[in-house]
Each structure stands twice: as C-alpha cells, then as structure tokens.
Length: 398
Image (tube, rainbow, N blue to C red; front, side, top):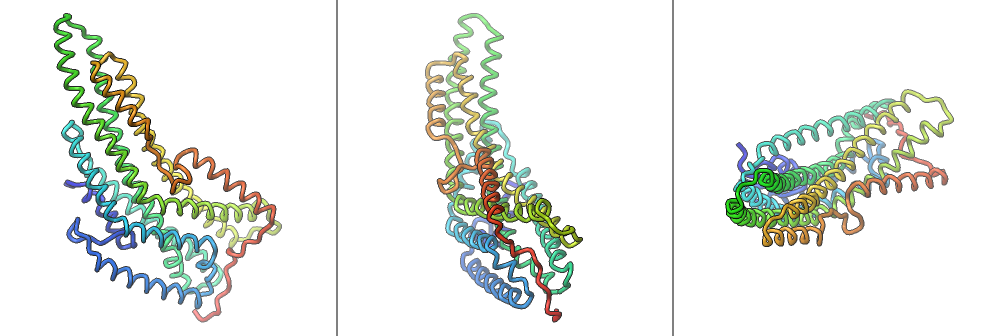
C-alpha cells in the first residue's frame, strides 16, 4: 500500500535519475549528490565517446549533426541542468502537495496514491515500449540497404536524448494530472455544498427551526469554505512553482517540436505531393518511419497542452460553482467569504506559461500549427533542399 506521494512517484523519479533528470535518493527522501555527480560524469564520458566513435566510423554523422538534432541535444542538456538545480524545489512542491492531501482527507476525500502509483508504472512501461519501438524502426531504416552491426546501435545513442526529453514531459504531465484531480475534488466538495442548499430549499420546516438550522449550517460552511479556499490557493501556488521548475525545459521542447514538425512535414510534402520519380520500397519505409516520429511528437505536444488546459479549466471552474453557491441565500459572512474566494481566483488566474512567451493550452496549439504551416509554405517556395534523408553507403568494413 502506497502511503505518500513521494513513494507513488518514486519509480518515475528513479528512472529520471538514471536519465540525468534528478538526484539519486537512498533511502527515499535523502539525495545522494556525490554519487549522482559521479554517475553523470561516467555516463556523459561514455556518451561522448560513443558519439565520437559512431559519427566517424559508421557514416551516420547526419543523424547527430543535423540542425534539429542539435536543438534536441541542447534541450536535453538544459533540462538536466535545470532539474538538478531545482530538484529541492520539486521535492518541496511534493511535500506541500502531500499536506494538501492530508487536509482533503480530513474533509472526507481519500488519498489516491495507489492509483497514482499504478499510473506511474503504466507510464514507465509505455515509455520503455516507445523507446524500443523508435530505436528498432530507426535501426531497420539505417540497415535497409547497407547492413552494419554498428548501425544497429546508432539509434540507441542518437535517440537517447530524445527519450530523455520525452521522460521529462511525462514527469511533468503526471504531476499535473494528479494536481488536476485535487482541483476536481475541491469542486466536488463545493458542489456538495450547493446541493445541500438546494435540498434545504425543498425541505422547509417551521420558521424557528429553519433559522436555528441556518445558524448552525452557516457556521459549519464558513469553516468548510475557509479550508477549501486555502487548499485551492495552495494548489494554485504549487502549480505556479512547478511551472517555474519545468518552464524552461518545456519551452525548449516546444522549439524542438516546431523544428521537427516542419522538417517532417517538408519531407512528406516532397515525397507525395512534389514527387517526380517512382516510389520505391526504401522511400515507402522512409515515409513510414517519418509518420511514426510525427505521430509520437504530435502526441507528446498535444498531451502536454491538453493537460495544462485541463488543469487550468478545473482550477477556474471553481469560480462558476462559487457564483451559484453565493446566490442560494447563505449568511452574510459566508457570502462575503465566497466573494473573497472568487476575487482571489480571478485576480490571478492559473495559467502555465513558457518563460512568459506564451501560455500552454488550446489557443497555443492552434497558433503553433498555423506557424508551422506558414513557415513550411515559405520553405517550400524557397525550394530549400533537405540533405538529411539519404543514407550514405557503408565502407564494407562493418
């Protein structure tokens, strides 16, 4: 039985530590910085050696030195450094979230750590399956015409940082999804108060009895509303702190997606719309693997923005429920407390921004795809050649 949110998220954070996205902890809650730094030094030295060896011996430099892969590498390195420097802030957010869960439990909302743990295990299994699928498809693509044992290993190095970026997105989305469930529970509590008011309106008693009941209920509701108000504001604060932690890496991720979408779309256009030659089996496989990568990156992009938009909607949905509750003739003090609650939410609505440049959500998705299409049209009109899809022949040594 999982008892804390740290324990529920620990499998995902441990995998992230092996990928350079956080400190190792043993036991849980005690970071091991010296071991972490030693591990990073060894793994990055090994990665640099494999990078040099594969680039200069397997004739696959185009996989490493293309301009969009350089952006992916920069994004992964920045994400690792930011996650290390702000690891304590992330752990503090999880502790605050645990306190919120304890408070909601006192109001009758059970903790959902076991469900979160099961979700985390599913996320890890899905991520590992995705890693093998993408690496296997790239290995098949590289070895279709010129087989080489080294080329089988190339995708495991070339795609490593792509998978690290994917894992970083999954960590943030998982935490946001759980925070969204907490906002949903708060809305359910307020909705229950609204239903109680409607029930009392239908079941009227004598005047004196009704007045006595109202005095008791108003006092209880004031305490109840005060707790929900502070829990809601605390969740908003935690969400903003998480936005600061992951904001830089997620903004760079959006830049990666923009470049990748543009490159894949251009290749698909050249293959199917602007083709002047017959389609071979090799070109078909090339297009198929481009489709696979396009679907994967689109899924990550849409999932991230969908989760941010859903969380903001749940946080702002509280205002609509509070307005309905304020019209059900509560006591003057309770009505004032409700209006203050509404004012605090409206004064600083919850939004997730990318370093202040844009806000994640449906509107950003629309503008993003419009920008991709616009730049793609300009590039097509300029007729810029794409040098990254021709597989050079092997020297026959491998």
